[in-house]
Every structure is written in C-alpha cells, then in structure tokens.
Image 1: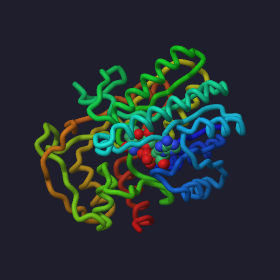
Image 2: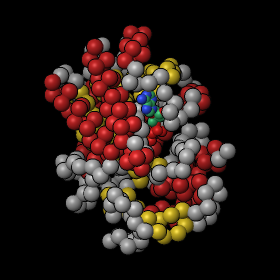
Image 3: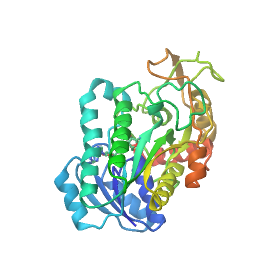
Length: 333
Ligand SMILES: NC(=O)c1ccc[n+]([C@@H]2O[C@H](COP(=O)([O-])OP(=O)(O)OC[C@H]3O[C@@H](n4cnc5c(N)ncnc54)[C@H](O)[C@@H]3O)[C@@H](O)[C@H]2O)c1
C-alpha cells in the first residue's frame, strides 16, 4: 500500500513513517514544516534504509493535494498535520480552527475526488474532557476544555458525518493518551523550539540545563502523591498502532474510534523520579498552583484496540525515559 502521511516530519508522524517503511508500505509525506524540520526526512531514510517522497507544503492547499494524488496512486492517508499547543489555542483560537479543520475538510474532498477511501486520524484523549471515571473507554461522553481539544472533537464529527454520507469510506480515529519517548536510534524524537507545553519535553530541557527547573502544577490532587496522573505511551508503540489501524481498515468500512494508551496511570512526580533514576541526571522542580483545565487523573482502557486491532503497548515507562533522553542528548544544541 502507498500511504500519504500528512505532518509526517513531526514527532509522531516521523516515527509512524519509520514503522510504515519497516512494514513495506510506501510513504509519501506532506508537511509545511511549521513545527518540524526537513532534515527529519533524511533521518527516516537513514533509520529504515528506504526512500520516502517528500512534499513541502500545506494540507489546506487543495491544488497541491490534487497534484500529489494525480502523481501517486494513494491507497490510504494518515492525517497528523495540525497545531497542538493547548495554551496557544486559547490565545489564538482561529489559527487552530482554520488549520486543523480546514486541513481535514480539504483532505477529505481530495480523497473523495480520487476515490481514496481509507483514513487514520490523529485524535486525542483531550476529547474526553474531565472524565467521570477511569479508565476511559471509547463510549465515554465527549467534551473539551480548550480550542485545541475542540478542533479534535469537531474533526471527529466531520469524519463521522462524512463517513455516514459516504459509506464506502473507512475511518479510524485514534485517541492518543500521552505520547513520549523517541526512536532508539536517537535520530528522531521531540525537541520543541519554544518553551514546551508537555511534561516530558520540559523535563528533558531542565535535565539538559536549558531551563532552570520544572513546575509541577499541583500536589493536592486525589492521586497517589497529589500530582496529576496520566497514561504515558511510547511513541514507537503509538506508531505501530497506526499500522494496525491501516490493516484493520483494509477489510472494513465505517467510523471507528480507538483509545491508544497503556492503561496504566503514572503521576508527574513518579515520572520525574523515574527519569532521574534511569538517566542518572538531576531534574530540579518546584510545586506550584494547579493549572486551570488540568484534570487529576486520566488513563485509557485500550481493550478495544487490543481486541479489534491486535495492538497493545509493549514498552515501559523506563524505556520512554531512556529513549527520550538519548534523543535529547544528541539534539540538545
Ligand atoms: N504529541 C501529543 O501529545 C499528541 C497527543 C494527542 C494528539 N496529538 C495529535 O497528533 C498529531 C501529531 O502530533 P505531533 O506531536 O507529532 O505534532 P508535531 O507538531 O510534531 O507534528 C505535526 C506536523 O504537522 C505539520 N503541520 C501542521 N499544520 C500543517 C499543515 N496545515 N499542512 C502541512 N503540515 C502541517 C507540522 O509542521 C508538524 O511537522 C497532531 O494532530 C496532534 O494534535 C498529539
């Protein structure tokens, strides 16, 4: 199968391209490099010893998409491209609605035009808002607490309505929990240019002495040690989930949401301590007030992905800490 990967030079996209190539898929990437670098293409090729086709461009650019679909017989699409910074989405909601929604509708229009009927979409556990219980199953009520989360929820709805109107389409919506870690080669990973929004990149920048200390938002949640509990998943396990989803879509139609998580909750303080221990580095932190919009606990029931996709997260939190730091040490400059 030949797969178009939007946002393929980004954090999760690049790891997924590696797994696609390792599993004998052909890969075409479109990315506008708004949050990644073209050098990632060469890194993907080095890891896999295979070639990818790369288009630098915007998924909202319909003419470019038509050109790509004209030049290549595309069998399926994995749609990662989008903005993801929660805080920025609160400040600049239109930037998020324009990019995340328009890229999805434009892509669907062109897929329909070229009779390409299989799509895997990057969604997020953020669509569950503050869950009434844990672990979270796919049938929990959907609601969001910020514009970024709303773009994910609206894209899911767009995909659902579109699939209903076009029953020949098959759609997998993958709701990621908290992807961290990096490829074991140390060549690809996550290294945000600005102050990171997420915990692991922040821990790494503190460990690398690029930031003075980590702020832990709240130590009075009803959790094991008072800090927030999340379901961290190794990005390589997550990438493999996309391969399984594509294989599933081959023989089915319909709209299929799946949680991709480990099913284990780990607290912020537990993650910091594990990172220090595994990597033998210091991560100074201070406890500060809770951050608005944060929930106490959030972890997945990933049984549906296990049952229907034959997928299960394999890597440990230690693996995530080690691989993330290995990448960071290679890229701290
Ligand atoms: N990383 C997470 O914690 C997380 C969690 C849940 C969901 N997601 C979703 O997964 C997807 C991938 O996340 P990531 O962490 O790899 O992010 P990322 O920013 O590293 O990758 C996204 C890529 O998309 C590109 N891009 C953005 N808008 C584009 C456009 N209009 N046209 C072409 N390229 C565009 C960026 O340059 C970047 O390379 C995103 O949709 C994100 O919302 C991420």
